[in-house]
Image (cartoon, rainbow, N blue to C red; front, side, top):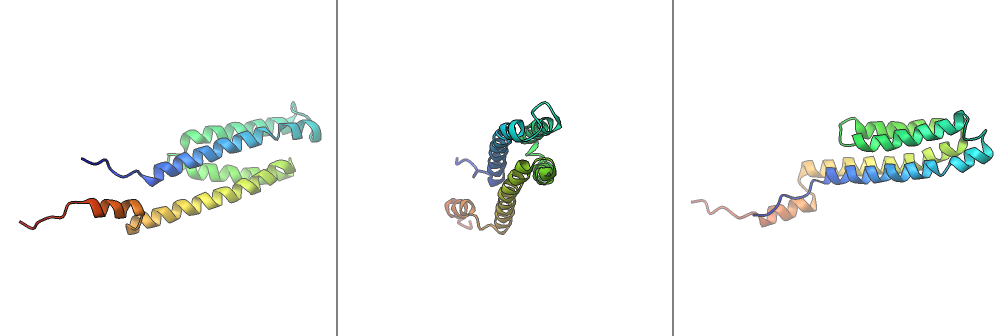
Amino acid sequence: MSKPPADPMRSFAAVMAATLLLEVVVVLLSMPVVANLGSGLATWQGVLVGALALALLLTCAVLRKPWGIWAAAGLQAVMIVCWVALPALGILGLVFGLVWTILLWMRWDVARRMAEGTLPSQQAAANTEPESTGD
């Protein structure tokens, strides 16, 4: 008995969670920028960076929910809007916004190809199925 092929959408959730974790690390690395160029870590700018990092981290837990991916994409928009408060966060928002745009496009493309039945894993499964003898 062969095991069923892997679900590509589960793999996408893992890739998106890893991207969010990377983004959390990068946002937290902007803390020295806030400390040196901003008004300090104990001010609203420091709280903004910390709250954004926490929101990104918590979003990892809800990525498998239907609205989780859109929550993650919405946080990218929030980061871009943060340009007003901290230009460094706005630049990070643009960079990660581009990454999320690419990830969402790839997810859409895989879903389309799954619906058409043209994924390589679907082709391999079709080639290994036993043929019926018609008896």
